[in-house]
Length: 94
Image (cartoon, rainbow, N blue to C red; front, side):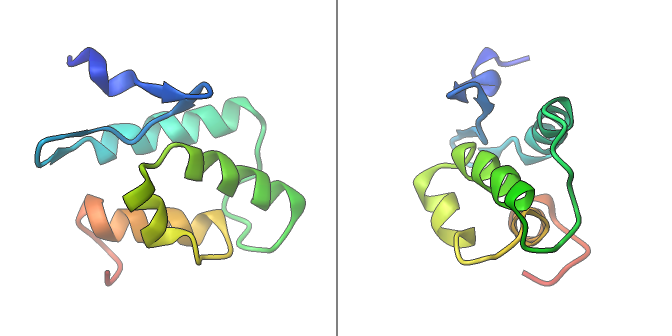
């Protein structure tokens, strides 16, 4: 596997792009595992201190252009749902 996939920013899994190839599905699993290891409560969809913490961690794992696409969302679930639409092919409308 490509070692560049595991690049991190401040220890946060980074959503790595290689040319047109986006490693989103692998990043998503790594990011969710990382958040669970930090004992961050996911998917509550409510505005809370912990939601802000998890959203901040996710945003640190994105490039500026990716962060610009999702920064206006208010919950980590909305951010991850939009990323899924953009890069994971999917269940939601982009």
